[in-house]
Length: 386
Ligand code: PMP
Image (cartoon, rainbow, N blue to C red; front, side, top):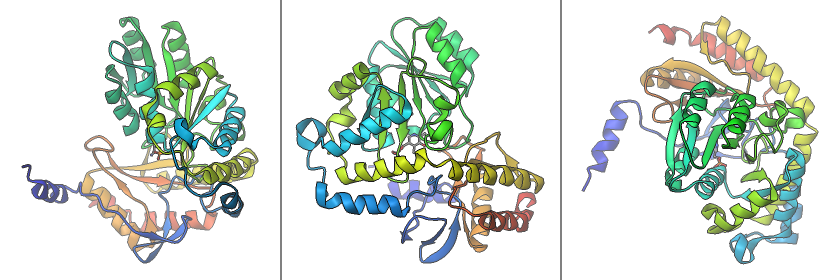
């Protein structure tokens, strides 16, 4: 048998051991983790809706109507009118013909890729795509070709030399770097080479584009350009689950074929209704988004003036690049001493030598919160040199 214990020990020695903190109380900027009150800059609750009273009230009101459990998978008897309502709302909001509600973004990616590509087909995947896309590619049994991050020219060359069915998959906003994919160019090469484009907009949905419709909408891309749009609901929407949106034919195909949709219990229907309430807040959330963008600009300006190495990101994901795993951990611990929670991201989540602190900003942060982060970063600058 493999020596699991010594593998764990080795992880500890190389700064790769992962730990979980126990949060008590709601997810909000000031939270309690392992009994300590900390100001958090690491959640994906970009609009501050995870603890919004309107969403909580919607959930509370929905429960007596729908009960709690999903009780069965959608294709047996779990498909509730609440799910249907949310799907209609999501389709209308994203300007798509129809939408399908999945239990998580992980399952949406796994289900979509493995349903739409199979043996003999080729999936083209950006090198920095999320783990769930990578796993979806493996599950599909299609040939997988990874292209250099955001490199549409090399993707076009790969597409040109490939025959058969082609699927191109990309994050809309990259989860660890925070940059936005060149979606207009990707849509164009996909059109030229007859490839189906899938965009996972987990981190763009709710944040980018008009009314928060996402990164594809920001570029003015419709269903013709991005036939499969995926969004997650546990991030900016502040609830849980995910959706896939596109043509009625593609959604019908997914209902028939996406194993992660078919063989799992439907989400609690009340959660779908709470997510509808959250969609209202997203749709009318221009003030939240503009506050968030002000925070992002201020953070970028001040943190780079302090000498921190940032990525070219205009989204709430603002990684501070460190390099070594142990140094990233040291900075994260030092910030914690200052009352801040900013997690270190290490391999295999990011490439070797690219450990970082993944700072995420939220509309729930105040400018005073940001000042606290910037002051702590200023105090901890010495760690960059040590
Ligand atoms: N796609 C991307 C780009 C993500 O960052 C994540 C989650 N971090 C997911 C999909 C998975 O979404 P969920 O958390 O809903 O499973």
